[in-house]
Every structure is written in structure tokens, then in C-alpha cells.
Image 1 (cartoon, rainbow, N blue to C red):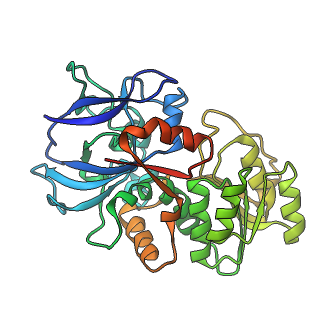
Image 2: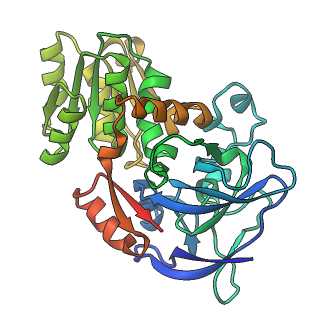
Image 3: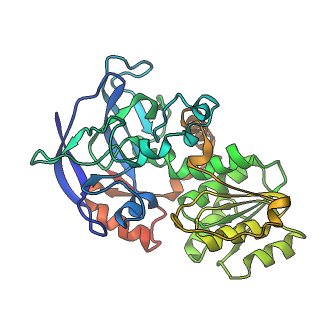
Length: 365
């Protein structure tokens, strides 16, 4: 067992509590990672608010970056000292995993949201020896050390990028960028609407610029985030008016080629679908509306595509290094989304995120 600091959620709707916890040794196909930094994601807060599992008490966090501290005796391709980013779990055996879509794994939900290993065990216990739910998105990286399956680990090599910056690549950044680069795959000169200028939406904006989109429309009620969107490549910004879809259709002469709903509310999903042209595609990459339903016009679905996207529908081991290389080439400045906080400032980071003062908080150990 290793003793580590962790942020534990002990009640729904409560603040995170910094505690000392015990972290178990890695099993044969597992890796022990010393976490350097971890992003705070809206999905963590959905668990806090009781919208998503796992049950409390739980260690959350799923945008970790760090250094491999130990490896199980069956692990291949990883060694102690490797710099890594952590990504969600997948089984590696189902049709989707074998087909190159591990973020659509047939057992994605139980693997990432149950709060336990597949066999029901947990690697985490509190100071009193009581079990803690963990393994959130396969990691629970609101802790100084985590035990993860080797499939969750993406080596980043010796690229000249600060390791404490990289955690958001494993969730929020890959979600937005993957929605564009892996799912929509827009052609050069095409048009894109992005609803929501948080980490997911702004990552979609940067990816649209990489893809060569010449019209990138962004909508968000936060004026500072709209200014950042323009800086990162948006050509048009709107403060989320009720008639946004009508405005976009009129301005583009029929609608945009594609849209990314990075919010995930019924209203934003409808706007995304209403704003795309015949033959276009709207993707839902946000999860603010988890558990809700959206009504759509069936006639629209005859000529337009609406689909959901989990984690950018990417292979993290391929997309994350690609995004890093684009960043080093000056084409994907995701660092401009990040504000660093000390780990014990987690509740301040959450407050700033919910107030819109910080796009992507990253907690540094």
C-alpha cells in the first residue's frame, strides 16, 4: 500500500475533502502512476450533483498526467519513469474496441462509471481502512498515486511540453478535438458551428482551424470566452441568442456543414440540428443534459445526421500524441485554456470553473 493525498467526495452536493488514503499495488496488467497534475472536468461535478454514478464515498478525477511509478508483471510497452497521460477505460475485446472505436466500448459504462474494477474490487481505502469507490474513468486521479489498467496509459515520450499541462488531453481536449478531427472530418473550406466555449468547445474550434474550416461560428453567453474563441480561430461569435439557428441559416445561405454541441442540453442539441444544412451533421459532445430527452423533427433526420460522441470517438494512444505534435508546431494552443491551481485548492478551482472564470482548471501536486 502507498499513502497518498486525495480529494474525496463523501456526500452528494458537498465539497471535496483532502484526505490521506491508501492505494494498493498494481495487479499484473495494471500500472501505478504518480500523478503530477489533473484537470477538473464538468463530468466530475455531475457525479457530485448526483446526475451520474458512482456512489459516494468516491475519489473522482479523470484528466490525470504523471509518471509511471510501478508496473504489473504482465505489462508491456511501459516502464518506470515514463511520462504519461491517462485516458478512459475500454475492454479491448468487443467489436467496437477491435474496430478502432474503444471510446464506444460495449462495456464503457461499467468500466468507467461503476467506481470499481470489473471484479468489484477497489484499489483505494481511507485512513480508517474503509473501501473508497474509485477507478473513475479507469483512474480516479484526484489522488497523488493511482492504479490504472495498462490500456488507460498513453506515453508522451520526451516531448518538450510541461507534464502538468497534459492531463486535459485525456478527456475534455480529446473530446472536442476528436469530435471534429475523428468524427466530422470537415473538408478544407467548410463551415462549423460550435455551441459552448468551454474546454470541449474551444478544443473543437482549434481542431476546426487545423482541419482548414474557413467559417467557424461559436456561441456562448460568456463574453470573455467568446473573445478567447476568436483568438483561437472562430470567425464569428454570438452570445447564445434564442434565434441562433435562424441567424446561422440565414447568414450561411442554408446552414453550416456541421455543428458541435459542446453543452449537451436539449435546447443546444436542437439548435445544432436546426443550424446544419441538408446533408450536414450535428454531433453532441457535451453532457450537461445527462438523463434528459430531446425532441427532434423526424423530417430533418431524413436529410441530416445527429449523433452522440463519447471522448471524441478516438483511439487516445493515437490522437493524444497527434494533438501534442500539433501543439508543438504552434497549431493547437490548448495551453491557453488552462489555469493551474495547487491541489488543495480544488474547491476554489471548482468554484471558478462553475462561475466561468476558468476554462480548464488543472490541479498541480
